[in-house]
Length: 93
Image (cartoon, rainbow, N blue to C red):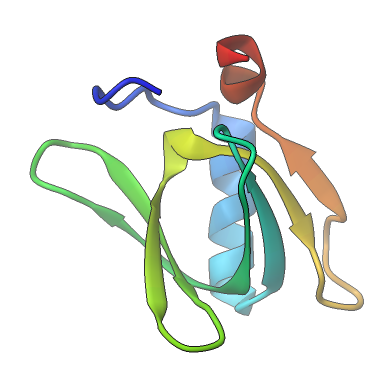
């Protein structure tokens, strides 16, 4: 993974915002092949202009840089989406 933030595609960002607005429980697959489950709380923009997702996991709040998210699957019944993938992350491989 690169240290320099790479903007994500608008489709994934829109779904992330929906997930935060509704506080969906999600499973995130990250570009390093790790996974994280938690409740979407908010997004943040840091001084370096990178964007981050704030998730409430079982024991703590965790921040994930948006360009490190490869897939997001909703675990909340009746959510407006089931699974979305980042075209940017898939290109990064």
